[in-house]
Length: 281
Image 1 (tube, rainbow, N blue to C red):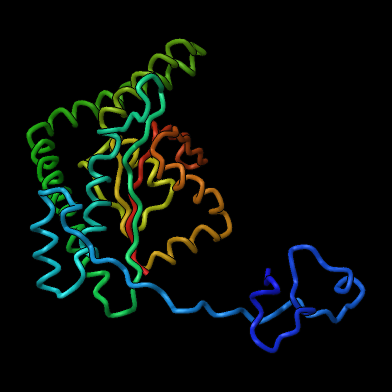
Image 2: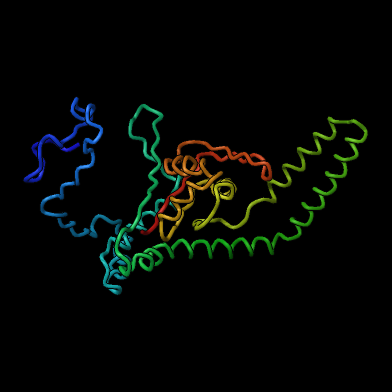
């Protein structure tokens, strides 16, 4: 809408339009609905300098060091670091805004660095998110050590699963469905113990189906890192992926249970998936 008083000098007020067509526009099929936009006066105001005191004390030295060595604004490091921290905390801490209410807010963050090419957006984000890589590396080492020390348990569990599968097949042949159901329950319990892997903290290019499995094994939440964030957003427009947007928006809140149903993977129930997100563009 272009109010009459905002018209540039020399333009006729009869060409101004509002939300509702005037009688003149309705009677004239050649009525000009496409007036050129009027430029803002004065341009954009300067952005205030980032105050390091806004950061937790434990983060300040790291942010200042990386920013000084790269000659970049500190917020280029501070923003992804705060998002990463929210992803690690996940649902491990929540906010209760009202004393006598079940209203729960998960302090989960989404953020992005928006700047011209060559401004070191990606290197600064990666420098902040390398803490997640370190955590994943340590978790993988601990998992490998546990598997090595308990390898015999894995072998015994696999043998038990194979034995129960034989019992289930034999019971079905005898039409003893009660015994077959009992064997199936034992198989499910043994497979649940066997499932999983090292703890995860970060994902880069995971589908919603894979995210569902990762959330099931990492209940506190995950952090998604996407360089060129526009590509991630455009992915929601692909045919067959229309539901991904809703899933990710729900995971931003971290307060809604989700169920992913797929023919190949079956049904995966996820209690309150929580996804922190940082990207660049």
